[in-house]
Length: 524
View 1: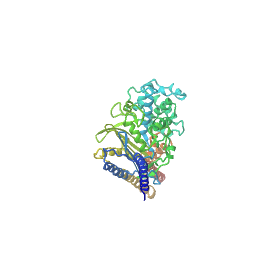
View 2 (view 1 turned 45 degrees about the vertical axis):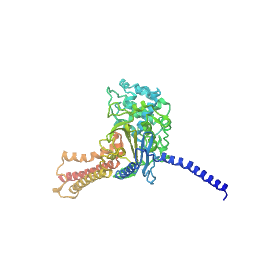
View 3 (view 1 turned 120 degrees about the horizontal axis):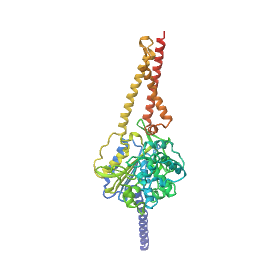
View 4 (view 1 turned 60 degrees about the vertical axis):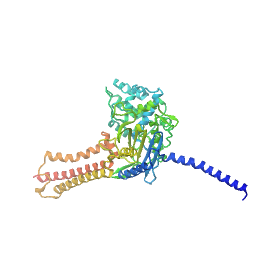
């Protein structure tokens, strides 16, 4: 081979090496951005512990799927999906959308503060100033003047005095159209502002506050609430897998929501998965990767890459509670492993989430799961759920601290609940059998079910039917909306209660037969 040929061959090899380097390096960088970037502060073993912890908790808490994001300073440290997104076995990834639940409130707060920094909203102005329109003008004429005391800031800090239980009827009857938010907001304006007579405003959590704020964003910006959030928050944060409608989220791989039925996870496709009238308070959708971008902006004074969504002062205001232990603006304070944190749980049918930010470490965690029932809460603390414990455990692992109290697992909780229901059911069936034996099978006069007709005996029979009648009224009306909410979030227990009511009525029927036989027997 001549020297020229050797040189030509060497040049080809060098070009090939350069070409491969130029091709492979960007691919590695992209993969690093999409999967996990590990800060030099944390060794690989720390994330191995996180993986082991998540895997163990998913089994212990019977979670179908989970998505995790961890950020530090202005970087994503770790992104990973675990388990299945739907019954087909589709794996969860960092890009899989989940329901945000009440974490949506922080997006609404950010939107309001953006408009405030533009001079379009005065946080200390009465809410009435921003609720314009023909329908509202009709409502405002009948309002008490004390409604003037409720400001935008009161809504943001949840100190308006509005109650959460009173919002349940709106949640159940909310329309599913483009005017749903306006209709819901006007309903709350009439229900709460008309009755406002509070001199001192104390913290009281209510979705109504953030529904009204979402409507104010809509009124002041001239855009729909959803369009505003997409343009001014999702887009600058590169939140490409975040959505404002359920249908849009489904098109992009939304995880399937699950409910627990007597301890078994069952996919849910019923009503109330998406309530557009409550959109600003709890029905946005996002992924772990997108939420990591959002947390970075919260940690870094409103900045993400080259975009500034809110001033550092605005972020500080958003994250500061007016009184410790109350409510900031879409965030609440707590303590995890000795570190002050801010965050928020989120829950909607079949979805739960928790985010924590450790301000002094510039550390953030987001955890999603696609199953939720009332049994996931640490009653009476309804704001502490399964993902709350998991997110707290991750913060502790990252700080090389014990995970902390784990509490009862979901199977252990269900064991207690199921055993209790089984014992009560067995006792009721036993009493029914005894009543049947006395009233139906013993035909001689010495063993009649009733020796005489008495007020006490008749009252007892009436009580047997009372529970069934009450349940029928609760089920076909909205006299007590919380009954329907309980039916949605703990259907198995409510089903058992209905069966017990039916069995009590059966016992009442047997008692009536015995009473009739007793009367006929005693007629001369």
